[in-house]
Image (tube, rainbow, N blue to C red):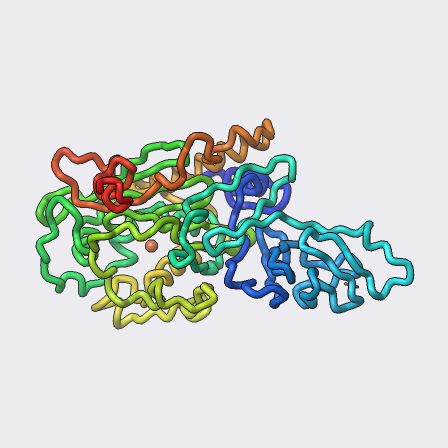
Length: 439
Ligand code: FES
Ligand SMILES: [Fe+2]
């Protein structure tokens, strides 16, 4: 539970808000490279942290991220002509380059373009994402390389999905292992025979789901880390072993969720505004699984498995609040626990239906919510500290001596003496093998 005041600080991201100021001290995704792939191609609207912007790629391939409103009489530059190294407003023909500088006023008798410059933010492309820094120029922090900088082009895999609720709510679900024992369950999992992987080592994906279902009372252990924290959800398996799912939180709005044998797929939650969110889901390192641990990923119930995503990388939302997420009450009685068809939409239902901005003064937190609580506390502490002293350098997870590529999620059935804290780290033998360090 939070006070109304803290919930406001936690959730609001507009210009001048404490959390808005904090998020503006980190490079964040603005759009996908695929959305503005072609030089002089159509611009896209980018609403980010409650600011209306337009992204475009100019004739030379440079990416601009500028204010949407034309400073002449306010028409939207989304409708502009992208031509000859600039975006030209179609109302009276004023033109702006990628820095926001007005370069031409074709309708003006006495041009004063050199005096007109609109808001622009710096951009950097990495891993199929156009990243931006929205803080004051003097406070610019280093670009954080999660692994995308050295990713071979053929390894780039990224998509984004829009969620209609506050960004913290969306991230709450990523740091909440308890819900997978319920929301993502399928009754049919009971019919899948034990394949012999309920023992120390890596279980199959099906057996993992059996474990989730078998033990809904996961024990949560959280360890603070330089990048935020890592936490494990520990369940007892039918054969009596400990099954650990390890998820990493990377301050301020990113997670690497548990996966067999370890995970380098990152989710970056980006507030569009206070009530709308994009979830960027991207690869940071080559596939982590040379031996094929885990096997095929779950059932085919996920409507858009990663490989089958639409070419522009924007996940369509066919299960929405407006159509009750197409809940199938018959399926809910006999096949799937939620009655909602695909994994992502199950999460969307749970997070969106808590309201546009969830009121945390009314919640009742329990033993499974400790990771969510830790994330809220870290965010509030940093936002308040920044508001008090303005010290950008003191913010968490800016890098420093920390290596973002050493942050991974993991999942395994533990040996009696095995510590989940080693899983997915550079000390984990499976990681070392995958990275070729044991050769
Ligand atoms: S409103 Fe854009 S040029 Fe006039
Ligand atoms: Fe989920």
